[in-house]
Length: 379
Image 1: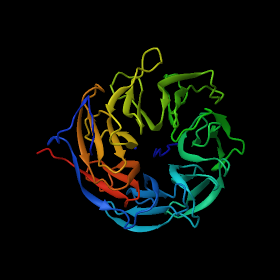
Image 2: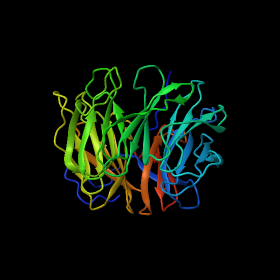
Image 3: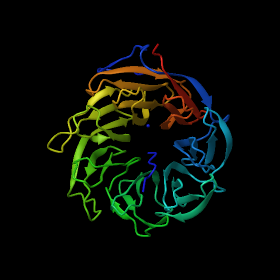
Image 4: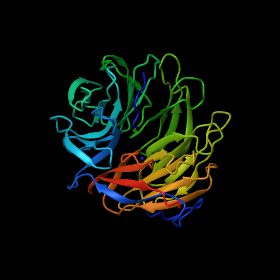
């Protein structure tokens, strides 16, 4: 079974980057405003929801204020041919995880709602029509983002919930029982507040590990997976500073040494890279940008088609930035794009207009959501 995992400018100080706009890098000057109004949109995902072979968009809305999530169907040429509400429920949403949860071959959606709203699975009829199918977790959990991985190797996508509450906050794993139904007793782990959790096999042992960044002034850890899907404090590896306030962590092999690295955005400390080591630990952080311009969203993707992972960062009231990687993880060419309106909460990356260049959708709060089309500057 193949899953769809849709898993985030001005830069004040770049010790390892060049700020000049480069004419050999793509630009993102052409845009499409996805909605006229500004609201509290928290995330965006790509997926072919109606089965026509073209990418569509899911806008996840609300955060702490109830709003109805929206589906925007693409026409394959960079336009929106139809827009409608995901369902009838106004809720406090942070992410919409996209995967085939019920095994019928169509992309479904898991909505990670904050308290006191139910966390819902919407199933797709294959034509982009969604209905509420099941629930996961408990309504009173202060859930921020949900990530997706097959944690028990049964061929079904499971859910990992990042919760941000008080100091007694716990994060959870909700296993898929089949047909899009989830276990009523989700598995607790990582007893500290988090807003994102990144699943990946960090130590290359065949089991999915969970990268859990601390959100509110504490130590972050990688929780090591095993065949019993138990993520214990006894089997975890620390990374980063002991007083982290990391909003997003993402994982990729940034320096092409075949060990996975961790990139973080910390709104108090900036953008950092922690390189994976042979002994399964992580290096001290390499500061890519400080927090004078506050980073808030993060996504890793090869945005210039050179087979090297680039770093995409959104900010609070500042243009977004792309750090184009030379493959060493220490030298970057950097461009900024977009305006300074609102806060970028999340990104989705895909070729929306099917021209061979990757495009960037930005979910923003207090500013309209916007799509940036990638265009090659090479002659």
